[in-house]
Amino acid sequence: MSEKNIKTSSPDITAAIFGPFDINVNVIQESFNVSIVNRPLDNSIGDCILISGKGEDVDKAYEVLTYLNKMAQMNNPITEQTIDYVISVVSENQSEKLNELDDNCFCVTANGKPIKAKTLGQQKYVNQIKKNTITLGIGPAGTGKTFLAVAMAVKSLRNKEVARIILTRPAVEAGERLGFLPGDLQSKIDPYLRPLYDALYELLGSENCARLMEKLTIEIAPLAYMRGRTLDDSFIILDEAQNTTPEQMKMFLTRLGYNSKVVVTGDLSQTDLPDGKKSGLAEAVKILKNIDDIAIHTFTEKDVVRHKLVQKIIVAYDKYEREAMASRERRNKK
Image 1 (cartoon, rainbow, N blue to C red):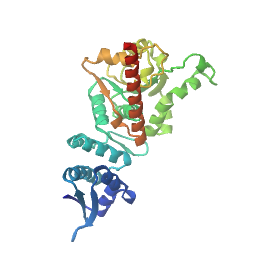
Image 2 (cartoon, rainbow, N blue to C red):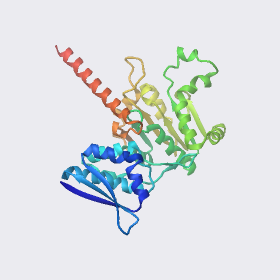
Image 3 (tube, one colour):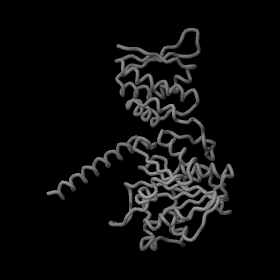
Image 4 (cartoon, one colour):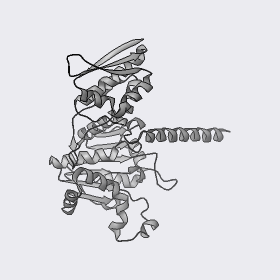
């Protein structure tokens, strides 16, 4: 039996670590098979969190609680996703990497909520956007690829580093189905661009966003509208890039002008192109991987910041697809 303890500076910090009805501590206890109890300190306003169990298990629970104590002291929210992520990092004996997470807020929403990287993958992605002219962010749903890119664009606009933000997406069904939608062309393409509007509304507020769009400081348009343009002094984001063709991707990337920055986001496991059509994003990753000032960042399921079931769904689908591919290869060899 081994024991370790962590001292907190106040009961409020302890409460934040333990969570409502001790939900955070219960998850840690189940994950590492340890016992965690709180003991008030004599002649002190703080508390002492006591961890007991087998040596290695206690060490890992101690690392998790130490990091949560640090978060609580900085008034950072401790969510279910935070607990799951920290436990997964510590379980893989990579707890030292948690210190790489930058606590600095790089953008603020319209409601004053600070935007910070929640995972190491997100932190690396944000840093690559800062350092490079072109960044390709690739990974599963829920990793924050688009939202973080839009947040960086808003930050650049607020700091007057760029004069405008341009957001674009390919309208995959831009043929027959689009024609059946009611309204003019803008009404037809708006459903494809809705996730970009949602991110902007959260970051800027709907009224401010509408005003900036009216002045063309912010432009949201389908990818086809990019042809023939040179985009100077702009922060340009291409979302859902897995649905571009190689020709469209080349056309988009060559729109880059002076003092501009480009972020391309996509999920190669969710391509909606017709069978037999190559993804422009997949091809761009191969072609651009060794070019200076172009970063290619790949998210994993550990970077998912939605409900924890999303991680499990992604892992399950990946496993199914690998097994299906292996089965096809075995059949082809026979």
